[in-house]
Image 1 (tube, rainbow, N blue to C red):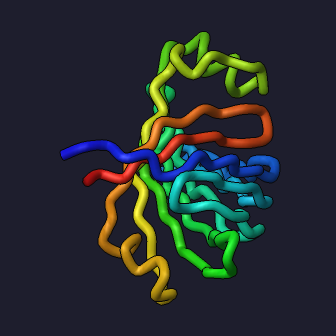
Image 2 (cartoon, helix red, strand yellow):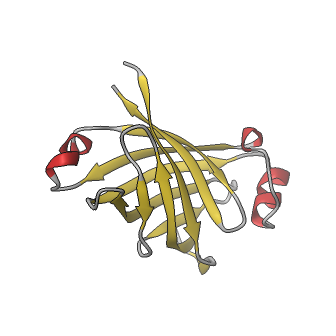
Length: 149
């Protein structure tokens, strides 16, 4: 098994909608405002719509659950879903929450990515699992995705 670079994603985010505490944790919904992705076999735009249906846990860990739509440079539409976790020292997470620039090596942010499409040019993505390492900024998420080969 190898990791093959798939694409770098820049996902623009809307302000956080905080639903409050539930039995799962603090539920937050963060709408996807747009963005772009670029890689050796995959590039294009992230369409507005979709969201991260995120849960913040008492220990500060965030459970990530996103679903949104990509449009490739050649007009194909792809569905992407990611699931993962983000955690780190409380002082680092507080800086992230305040919108500060934080070195991604100071916290753990990893994703599992799945794709779905009916476009023949990208059917290979339906059979591809990907992992990613992410970074959070005040209004975006950036992550580098790698196909598991």
